[in-house]
Amino acid sequence: HVPTTVLAQVDASIGGKTAVNTGAGKNMIGTIYHPNFVLCDTSMLQTLSGEAYYEGFAEIIKYALICDKELFEYLENTDIFQIRNNIATVITKCVKHKADIVAYDEADNNERLKLNFGHTIAHAIEKYYGYKIYSHPRAVGIGLYSTVLICENEGICKQGTAQRIKTLLKKFSLEYKMPQIASEDFYTIIANDKKFSSGGLKETVITDIGQSKIILLDDSKIKNIAEKYLKELK
Image (cartoon, rainbow, N blue to C red; front, side, top):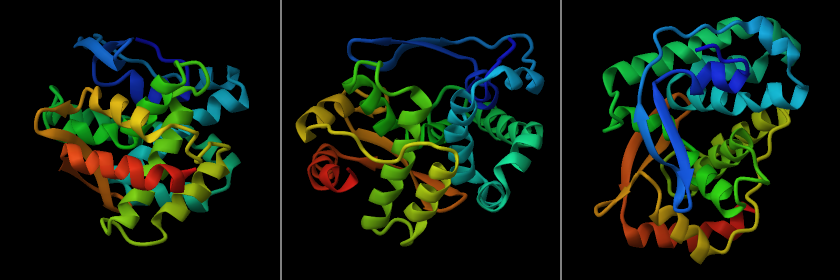
């Protein structure tokens, strides 16, 4: 497998997931089938437009948030052109993080769920807008910021964390504002998320930059979040 975008090199090419969208939601049907070899040739990234290049940083920021504070601070404090010149190192860090997580939990039972950080909201945005208005990484950027803002308001992580993420997303020209979605539509989409079961929704949250955990949200909590925060997130 030879991924040719930043998004594919840091995320999609690793882990063996092959999935398709259905009318019910994102990535609802799929298998785990690993390629024999993955080659990430960063010279191919030079062919990308600026927009296509920096979209992939939504997933890079995700890795930094769930398990790599040092990477987050590097992205915060380093000139954007210097980051581009050092992209091979950044991609290598992300690939190692994902490979380690997948090796520990290939079947997505627990630890691998952390790779879905920000994706519950992201997938809801993509589904609501028919997979046409928001690309996956742009929806992920919104999902990262929105999830952390909710974490702040729920006392899960400290105040000011969401502002740092917002600043970093803007640095790479990524969106953070939640688009218009009615709370009842949002809940309906979430209820069909692949992480949702009879016990509730397994959702990844961060307690600090670089530290994450998985919590279980019951049905009433999801409805409460949808009603309480959707207007605030816009």
